[in-house]
Image (cartoon, rainbow, N blue to C red):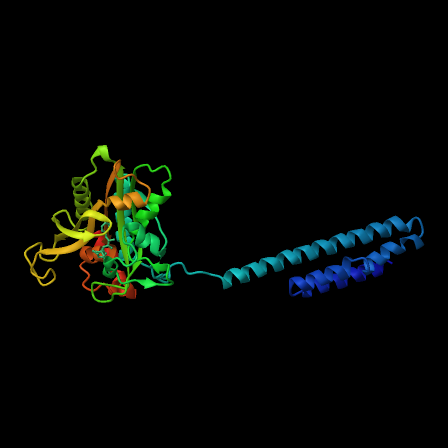
Length: 349
Ligand code: FA5
């Protein structure tokens, strides 16, 4: 019996020495120490031995079993270390190599201008509101004192989707929406920025452009006046285009304001001296504005005997053109990275 055990021990040592990988180690473990292994069979057969021999052989089998187990564990540890070393070698990184440059996007000039407008008006206590681009005829025109068939509708060549729905031609639609939504008819001080659409397309007109609308309504006794409108627009334009910009109010016509004005600014290119861009006038038209028409107040639930207000609207794309000296509005929509990435630098100047 002892020889048999010595034989098992010897073969086990040889086989352990031949193991090449972890799987072989696992398989050998089952073979040498599992329930059907020779050592297990020996233990099962102890009952056939004499009472004197039984404990001796039993403890010998257990010793050999323990020794094999230790040797197998050692081998497994060794193999695991080898696998790890191979993996580390394979995944070795040379952190001194130059990295791959990631191309960073750039904020669109229109979004830069929108964010600056919002920051400015929020600092003056305005709310920033939103409205739908797919608008009803009612909110885009009728509630702004432009009944169906009104000749002034021709000023804005529109994209109608159905008889009732169109792509909004102006953010002024949000004036009406804000007044209607304000159920308790309290004072309003809001701006709205967003996309607008008209059937136009040239260097200074796009079929899709952006406007910012401003609306202030307060109780009449507080005397919301043209002077407030003028002061607000001066702050706005000087902040957006330059501290030296002068404003000129020209009487104009919008069905939703009375009186109405078009506001010009001194030409950003020649500083007011006159050049080709401003057609030698020294001025460039920038926005429309006026005191809210009493009909508009009434149609949207505000009593014109108790409330008064002013409104203004301007093209954000045009503001961006003035601010950055862009000569063709269409550059703003072609999304050429070479064009767009210039503005990171320009804003830092
Ligand atoms: C209006 O749209 C009025 N809703 C503005 C207004 C608001 C007046 C509140 C009174 C009170 P107008 O059609 O002039 O007005 O357009 C306003 C500005 O939008 C223009 O000065 C111009 O900057 C810009 N704009 C108009 N059409 C285009 C276009 N096709 N492409 C780019 N910008 C445009």
